[in-house]
Length: 349
Image (cartoon, rainbow, N blue to C red; front, top):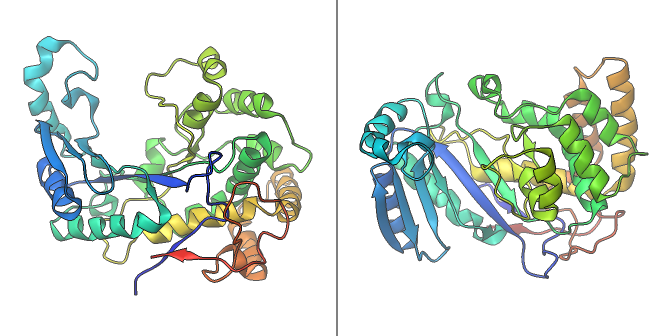
């Protein structure tokens, strides 16, 4: 049975346009030209092979795709002297034994995401392998949903919801051991999480960004807010760090899910729907504050080992947080904070 993609509770951007989601998918055992050809057959467009390990598929009915080996030294113009360019294909051939190829899809609406699910099925049929295929692999699925609002309360509530659900998300996703050991998706420090989920913690946007940077001076978090903060206040971020890899954009960068292309039972939708649970919780201030108080107490008592089970109890008592037929039907970003789980919801696909 196909898993439907649930719609988030707030469905428009600050400009009033439908929110879109960028998707990045890592895999192995299928080279860039073959994966690009798969995208082309499915969505149309034109394939341009920049080098053996990087292709562009432009002008598709969804937008422009990039397919490349996730290894900077394999590509000219991404660091290193130009005199080394003749060696880059060889480095790419060697690196592809453990480094993933990545498809970066154009931003699409949630209603269009089932088309990316079909792309996953096609890649799997061609032999693309996921992170579970080898203990050397550490492949991820990244979602980049556009924000519905840019005010501090909205961003903070989403961060609070993520921090409260993170232990449950890790358990449900069964985060790959190699990915966890790699450090690329490190959990937020418990003292920082306990501070943020406190109901009394209500900084302005500048304070939220400053606190985040002070306690998380790295992009390597399960939920990376650097791209969003760079979009909202580039100078503040630049004053704290210089990182050429940060691309400012008005999105959350959710990096926790595994990319399990070898598993026919795995789907984009299941991981996307867990993110929707985060967004649904973020719209209920009363639930956030109650959970935040409980989390702080558990953290102070060093009793967070059973927190995922505490979330199980929450979800059982509030089925609208996950139920595909319940949720917030308010499509715009100006929703209030209460009653968000009582209206009829919608789903895509």
